[in-house]
Image (cartoon, rainbow, N blue to C red):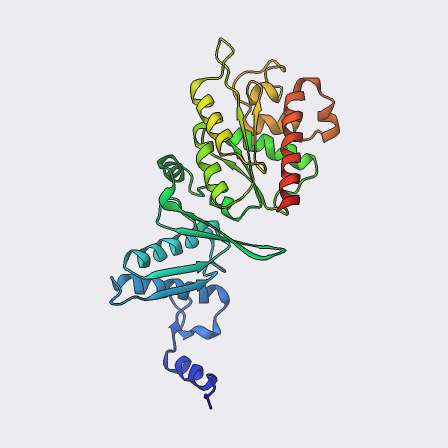
Length: 309
């Protein structure tokens, strides 16, 4: 007969008692009496202590299920660095997570996206070893790094924050709840980075829709960097993906120049001029028909992707 494990677990807990002082002038207490937030901090401290020991003497596995629970974003990023240090020291690290802070395109990671289908669980993989230098550089500039795309059902790729604001506003006015449907609208940091993000999505089989300016020059032809990016997107695109353009750019599409204004269509300008208007009112504005057409096309693409996922 195999003995039960409860006595063994109780013995280990009694022998490995951890005392924690919750404050500088407070007496230490048994860690088991502290809340879940403290338990997460203790786990983080334990991982960092192990990382300080240096290289693993033999093949050792570290398995963690949602270790980010109860940690705020800054400590989640610190947890990611601790796990990376363990990996660099020879540990085999496997983590199940829902936290984008634990994803990094700059570090050596093998990402497995698990989704449930009518046929059971489906796994799709992406190795950060294949990430472009542009994708790594963008992460340096953007602390969040757009890592939430690996958890999304659909990803909308935009050139910059102005486009993100315009797209989110329009989609929400049509009644789409991006958070409920797990739709990520991401600032890719320029038209040249759109194909890099599209490749990540494609490898994980996440439907994507890219929206960018046409960027016409004086002769009426697209500028060379935009043409290169557009051609790359078309080559990556599958039947579930889409590539759309503002004609000629967001400022023209959303009516900034038609109102006699100059400069960029900043999020503040967009909100002040269109934020309080209902969707039906916007659809009746002849100066933003191009904007309405793009939003409608993005919404259709999202609905199609969600329906087939």
